Image (cartoon, rainbow, N blue to C red; front, top):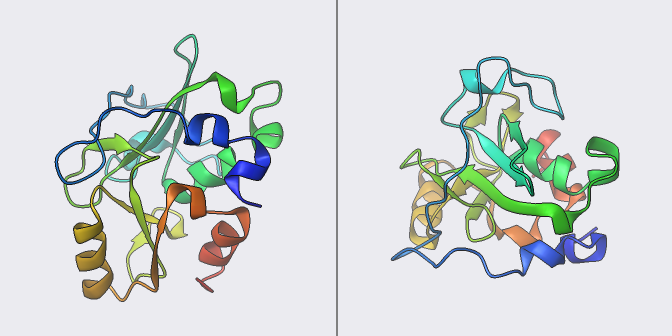
Length: 165
């Protein structure tokens, strides 16, 4: 299902932070603490700072993930992973840029799928701030394609996880 079909378009289309020169804006998101676990896979997130993704809810609560793949699994299945929450309550969605290792707006990032780079949970969607960086990464690491936030579906996530994408 596309994000818009799940009601995620409410925040996916909302005005994100101003675009940084050449790509996704840097965003402020809390860092995971040592005991924070990914709500999708259960891994300790702080062990993998170069892969951290975060959802910040109204009121300041945060959910941290060990990669963009689990972030999208969570967002695309909110009733399963965040019962009682809605997409309208999401304030910030951040991913870590592969090259700069800085937190960027997930809604503006580019995601390379099908590359030879593995994250903590294996195959991963690789977030990059700019299209130029995504194209370079894709060439260097045999990426299959580059997607934008709204193009990532649950089927894409499943195919990435299975090594089919």
